Amino acid sequence: MSQFQVRTDLALETREKFEEDNVEIKGVRVEEECREESEIKITTMVIETENGAKAMGKPKGTYITLEAASLDSQDEDYHREVSVELARLIQRLLPEKKDPVSVLVAGLGNREVTPDALGPRVVDNMLITRHVLKEFGKYAFGEEEVHAVSGIVPGVMAQTGMESQEIIRGVVEETKPDVMIAIDALAARSTRRLSRTIQITDTGINPGSGVGNHRHGLSRETIGIPVIAIGVPTVVDAATIVNDTMHTLIQAMEENSHLKTLSAGLNALNEMEKYELIRELLSPQLNTMFVTPKDIDESVKRLSFTISEGLNIAFA
Figure 1: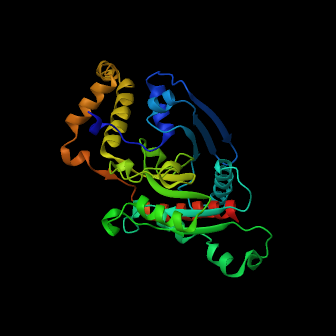
Figure 2: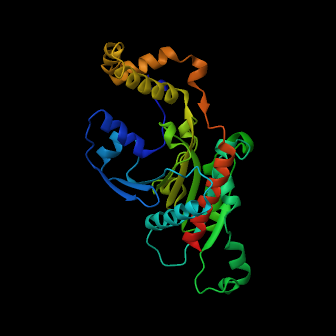
Figure 3: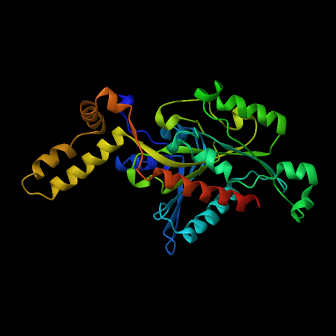
């Protein structure tokens, strides 16, 4: 049955699923902040225990979700606000260490596939400083303290024949950064979160997991340094479309006196029965299909600038 479950990389959506089923998760602490003037909502979820991690299906650690209703707009001032907020959240997750720090930014994904090109494009827009510091020293920037920022785009296995983890681990061993920032595109459970949500976590990342293409993970345990992962959902799978459609259909039926009885029948289905219904609706071909918005080119371009600007502010 698991192959028909709605996939999501967002810890917030996993928690919401438990709330929908009226299930309380012990060992998981949640805090919310709202910026009403900028319509930005920040949810911090901390998985504190092994039982909480097992229930959530995610490692122990901190997961911060930034939701911005207008993140898909072309308002440059608004994106600047998001970048400043993102910089603050990144600095919250940085390990305690003397300044300045050496940072490796890894842009995960396939540059040739637009919904998966977020990571490479963020690195393209980054202010890279490590080579200048090595050549001319910190005074080349006219500052007393300058973070050494380097970047890498490891590509995907189909392009290189190597795991991203293998490439990055070799770079880490050679350059010895203090922390790594991994940028990747994610999959969401809800279409309303596409290109409007940024997740930041200190637990690392598993490239390709959102589309069922599991690769070796990038974390402190696998590469030897702290890993902060930043991701934005750019795709949803076919099961998500069916799930959203079913939810909307039930709501419409409840408002129609002639169809109210039928809606009550659908509402009575438990999650396993709903997944069975989705399985019957989806052919094997549709079950492997992922959908992205038609304006994804512009969205990825804007988001890559927003995230890179946040990183530049954090490490400027």
